[in-house]
Amino acid sequence: MKRESLDSKQGHSEQSASLKLLRKMVDVKAVEVRALALGFVYYFFVLSSYYIIRPIRDDMGAAGGVENLPWMFTGTLLAMLVANALFAALVAKFSRRRFIPIAYRFFISNLVIFFLLLLLVPKEQNVWVGRVFFVWTSVFNLFVISVFWAFMADVFSTDQGKRLFGFISVGGTLGGIVGAAITAALVQKIGALNLLLVSAVLLELSAQCVRLFPTAFEGSRASIREKASAERPIGGGIWSGIVHDLRSPYLLGICAYMLLYATTSTLLYFQQVSIAASAFADRGARTAFFAHVDLLVNVLTILVQAFLTGRLLKWLGVGITLALLPAMSVIGFTAMGMMPTLTLLVIFLTLRRAGNFAVARPAREVLFTVVSREDKYKAKSFIDTFIYRAGDQIGAWSSPALGWMGLGLTGVSFVAAPLAAIWFFISLWLGRKQVAMAHEHHNQAETAAAATPLNAIGLAESAD
Image (tube, rainbow, N blue to C red; front, side):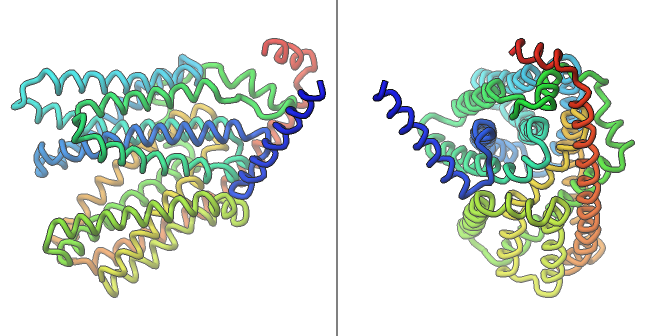
């Protein structure tokens, strides 16, 4: 007995030490550790699965002809609408622990189909399979990530999201690095075709993470009531997400935020390509330049996500944290307009991309913690996929149009800067609206918990 008591004390001491170490990076409570770890691992598997096939997609896109890329992006937009309708139908009929794995396994089955097609179809016809794969991957990457963050916004409250989303994002960043490293290391050994199956395995592991998530964190009346309702089918129509986006000023504001982010990102991308092309005559040197920028972005992103994001959301609030990226963009585009140099481009590009992954993305996901469960999955999915790609399209067609009008790099920057300023004010408005909605949601939850009969709580506990 004494031996067991000593072992128990030692195990508890080790657990406390691990919790203290974790709390140096993230403000997590003991009851939240399991969900935090699962969110971290879940995001790791999702992004590692995508980054394994991303280089394969890019290669197939190039093989399909660069001149066909605009048509493939248009095809992606149409495919986004179909995917959202299918997913909304799943959300209406099944609980989240069922519809999320079903959605992921749909994509897994697609990977297996592409594997068989590329294996069996004659090589001269592979270009058509490649074009379809390019469109499919462009839908896949946004969709599975959107579903992940919808689930996080559904499981965690606003306060938890502010504290934990930054650290959970580290899992995704590491997953992206590992996924790209797997492709780089194995593509010559096992071939690009077999990597599709590796991606499918990782995606299945992410689906398994959903099953292990806790539904509630505390034994309060509110948490028991949430646990009783969280696994019920959400219901609603397949186009509810689009309708709600158009009717809600708050969701429309998030749409505008996403549209302006995607548009300015694409404008910056075209500037990046133009400046790099003039600075490096050699393609190898240009590739190395982009690789070094990616490395800087990844290192800075992980450091900020692990040690700073949660603190920024706690200290500054959602609105100001959201506004950091557009404020940086106003300064960056203005500076690029006055002095479009390679050094300035590297600084602006690195800070903006790292700022998006490490700060803006977690803050943007906190916005969805205060909307209805239906909107978390349906409206959010439409915003993260269709609206985002629409912004891409606007930016992609605007850049050559501005060039046709005689506006060079300087002119594009001075067009992008006012857009970023509008984006900045929308961010502040969204932050204020989110705080008001969070307060209202908290009051409603307390009222509902107080009205829950004690015998109903006992029934819920006995059902567990």
